[in-house]
Structure formats: structure tokens, C-alpha cells
Amino acid sequence: MTNRFLKIILFLCIVLILGGCAARQPVRESPPFKAIDLNPRIVSGDYVQKVDQFLVILDLSGTARGRKYQTARGLVKNLNLTIPNLRLKAGIRVFGEYADQNVLVYGMVDHTRSEFEAAIPVSGGYGQSPLGESIAAAGLDLKQASGNMALIIFSDGLETGTSSIEAAEALKKQYGDRLCIYVVSLGSSSRGKKVLEGVSKSGRCGFIVNPEEIQSPEGMAGFVEKIFLAKAPPKPEPAGVLPSRPASPSAPPKPKEVPPTSPPPLDSDGDGVLNDVDKCPSTPRGAKVDKEGCWVLPITYFDKAKWNINKGFVPALNEVATVLKSNPEVKVVIGGHTDNRGTGPYNKKLSEKRAKEVQSYLIKAGVSRERLNPWGYGETRQAVPNTSPENMAKNRRVDLIPVR
Image (cartoon, rainbow, N blue to C red):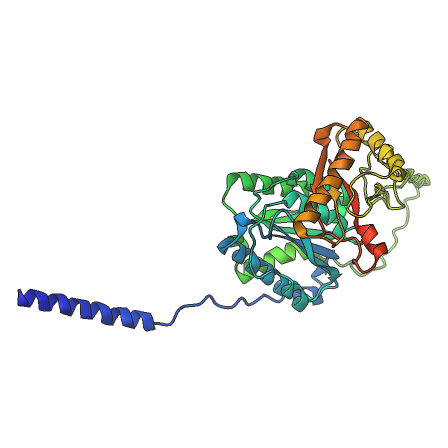
């Protein structure tokens, strides 16, 4: 019995010794990400810049928090480190930190690595997944953008609210060939992947990847290259003088070539703005447009703490209803907003009432309910800083975003 007891004690001592040795072993950390330098490819003249603006949409929702979000955050940081020295405007829009809010936390401004990284949230949130609303809001973020644009989405695709695919299709129609959409699929849900594949396809010129494909420096460099760079066109051969051949005396003279006449300039959507300058090539029929061919949608403003529509805004809403009835394929996101007075929950409720009041008016004007998606943003999307009563009045509003 004593021998057996001593054997047990000896065994436990050996286990403790081995465990202590194991505990003292250094923890292997992931090696720091060493971004591949893409600048030599530009300096050599082999590649040229193809994007002038880029916007990252980052999923902070409850379904993407924890390890999934930290993976996404790391990828966004590595993307930032790998982008070569280009003159770019950049932005970051996040959604789902809490409730159903989405916010532009950075941009659109001149891209700098330090400021861009500092704007990436440290942790995810607990909110819903208004991916569709974030994509629709991207249309406003990029409104002042010039040149080509890239929208880069990091999400698990488990959306709530507006259809993300419809929002992406509307965004593509708004900006045409100037915009490409790229998606990093964070989740394993088949439903979420189906949504993200549809969003990617809506961009026509983008693609979808999994995190594993771009975690290495080589994978991220390939990802960044495809988004931001294009192969330079071949350099023309030096012009040489070819020896002239005497014409055969029996050869008949060549008839004079008549230069082809240029086709008349096109205006495909009939909005009065020619295709070569039209930044919104699929404007609904009958809509009033600006000089760039984009539908000028009215903004409805409200009195403090009120949600009833003032009579002065009725004619403009009637014009919107007329256009929508003539274009049954067009849907509208109705965004309600407040100034920053009042609590967050109060402002959220008030903005929803304003959005639903405009929805109700358009329904009475003959537009079907299923084409109108009211959404209350509270005080989260200010048009101007709340620094004066005049500015606060501009933030008490409802704006409209078309979605096809």
C-alpha cells in the first residue's frame, strides 16, 4: 500500500515538473505582417494607378464580433499598409456597433496610413447588420468623388433591413463604370455568403475573397494590386521611315477614302445629359437632374421635435411620387434624421416618425408601400455640425435614396 502511494506521489511530481517546463516555454506569436512594397511596380512603369477614391465598409455587428471582427480588423490594417504611395481619397464606414446605426468614421479625405489606421475601431459591437443601408450611404459618401472608385466590404453578409444586393445595384447604376465593388466574406453562413456574392456581382468589375486568401503578405499584395493598379499599356514602337515603293504603272489609282462621320452623341437615359459626362446613366424617366445627370431628390425639413410635413415641401414630394409611379422598378430608402438635442433613443424614435410620415404621404400619392423603406438614423448622420440654430434646422430632415 505504501509503495503504491509513493508511486502516485512520484507520478504527480513528474506531471507538475513537466507542466512547469511547458508553462515556461515561450508563447509563439504570429510574425508581424511585412507588407510587400508595390511602389517599384509603379516606378518601373509596368503598372499605373487605376483608382482615385476608395471606401471601406466594416461590419461591427453582433454576428461579426469577437475573433471574426479581429480578423477583419487585421486585414483592413494590412490593406492599409500594402497600398502603395498613391494620391487617393479614402474613407471608412462602419455599421452594427450598437442598434442599427452606420457611421462614416473616417473620410472622405486624402489617404494617410497613420490616420486611416487610427480610425479603425478596436473592437466589434452588439448591434444589428444594416449592410444595405451602409451601401446606400456610400452613395452619399462618394457623391463628391471624381475619377474611379473602389468600395471594399468586410462583412459576414447576415443583413438586416434594406436589401444589400439592391443597394449595391443602385450604387452601381449611380456611378457606372467608375465604381467596382470588392467583398471579403467573413462568415461561414450560406445565407450570408449568398448575399455577399450578389453584392460582388452587382459591381460587375469586382470580386469576392475569403480572409484566408489575403492573410499572407503575398495574398494581400495581389488583392491590393487588383484593386488599385492596372498594367500599363504597351509602349509604342519608335516611329521609323519605311522605304516607299513605286506604284505599278498598271495599277489603277486608289479611290480617295472618305473619313467616317462621327455618330451623334448619345443620351441613353434621356435626361438631357450626354453619356460622356453623365455620372448617373440610369436616371428614372421624368426625374429632374443636375449637370452630371443625377436625380436631384428633395430634402424635407422639420420643425424642432416635430414630424408633420410642412406645406412648403408638398410640391416636391408630389414630383417624387410622379417619377416613382412612372418607374415601377425604382425603390426608395427614406432616411429620417434629427439634430443632436435630446437623448439617443428619443432622437432615434423621432427620426423614424419623420421617415414614416414621408412614407405615408407618398403612399397616399399613389406609390406602393413595398417600394418605400423608412429608416430612422437619429442624430448619427449629420448634414452639417450642430453649431448653430440654422445648422440644427438643416439636420432635422428626411432625405431620399433611390434603389433599383
